[in-house]
Length: 264
Length: 296
Ligand SMILES: Nc1ncnc2c1ncn2[C@@H]1O[C@H](COP(=O)(O)OP(=O)(O)OP(=O)(O)O)[C@@H](O)[C@H]1O
Ligand SMILES: [Mg+2]
View 1 (cartoon, rainbow over the protein chains, first blue to last red):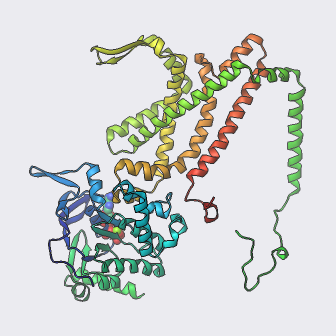
View 2: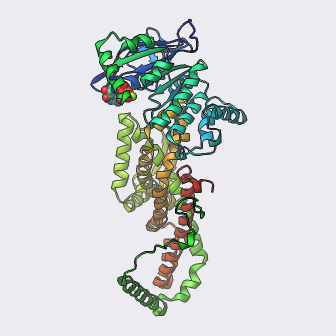
View 3: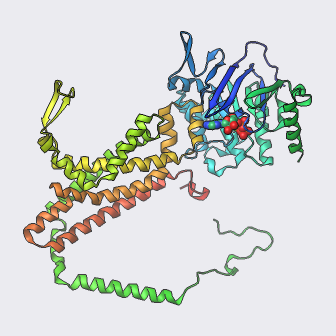
């Protein structure tokens, strides 16, 4: 397993609160990821896992609390005593440093696989086309889809689409990768090919926060497991502790059910 | 689909497989006969009734005044569609924004311009000169004027036609574009933002091209409809195709053949537009075609 550095945290979310309509979706969530750390985020449906990830890259704005990546506040700036939302242009620049992979892949269907990958490096980073294409081919080799550069997303299986989505996010050379249930829309036999790619990514020292229902994968790959429920992190720690001997009774119930479902 | 039959159990030469065909009903033949007889009768009337004066049709088809009318019809259609599309995009984006003022303005715009007859709007713009003799640019409510021209000059037949048809078209295009934009999955916007695209880039590179697939077919209908709606501009004496033939038949009293001239020209123009529409639709369905066609 990759040796996690001991320095300052690369990603730090402090006391995140968020209301959506009448319910409070996040109730003071704090979480830190050091460079090279893989955090698996588990928890029942509606716990607020997706919402937390979306706050981390400022796709949604928290009502309270700060997100920092390498010490830079994401989505807002300090003006006097207050924090004020940054102009969308600057938030976009910050988001480019944070990779995100979605449950439904969200590849751009009107663009070929190659165009899906090279567009943002060229348009957002100003990379030259030749360099972007070379980068894309390297990444396609890494996700073992070298022959699909000219295909359109619609003609690929779900597992292939998700691997392309990972390559597309990696093309921006992000500081951290966020995964929101990357295999939940996939058949079991396609799940493994995606998990293998994520596992290899962990070995290269990529910092990752992965929302998943795959308890076994979390145990094998994550340095830290966090279990969320009702808008809070109920328990967080090394996989051995959290998954084998959870202290919180709610976490015990959740894990017992999750493991039973896995056995089925 | 390839012709080769995959090898394996049950494979055989293609020709020996039974051929499936549609079932034919005897009523079908009766129907065809009725249609043929009907068409033949209409053709006979049209060709033999001297009232249609086919020689006059032939003589005026390429008459300079008719050709000028055709040119004006095309030019007006083009400008109205450009104006309608630009207004449509702006109003659609306003309509989809969360800002209640922008949203409300867009709703009111569509409500008004879609809710009043285009003929009324046309004549309204044409007669606006009578109410506001001067058009000026400056501080409102009696402040100093930076710029001023007489409205009778500013609002010619052409500007009245352009404004009347253009605002109306803008209201319809706004609805078409809005439907197109909302047809694009929200996940596309999120993925684009997550990659660091700015809002304008997300709109232009990701959302709009996908929305085009839903926007193009109804827009094609709008263009074809507008080509014919420009004939309404004849009421404000704009020299488009309809007005040209009217001018001619009011002089020669050859009403029927001149109407046929106009109808034939509209048919020709619409046919050309339909072909153009086919190619544009094909362009914007990239990525949605089956694998076999994707190489084309
Ligand atoms: N836009 C919204 N308006 C109202 N409630 C919302 C909105 N978005 C999320 N919620 C609520 O917030 C809660 C957390 O949602 P979230 O999607 O973050 O959960 P999750 O842990 O990702 O669940 P899942 O495992 O089902 O993906 C849910 O109860 C959901 O109903
Ligand atoms: Mg979720």
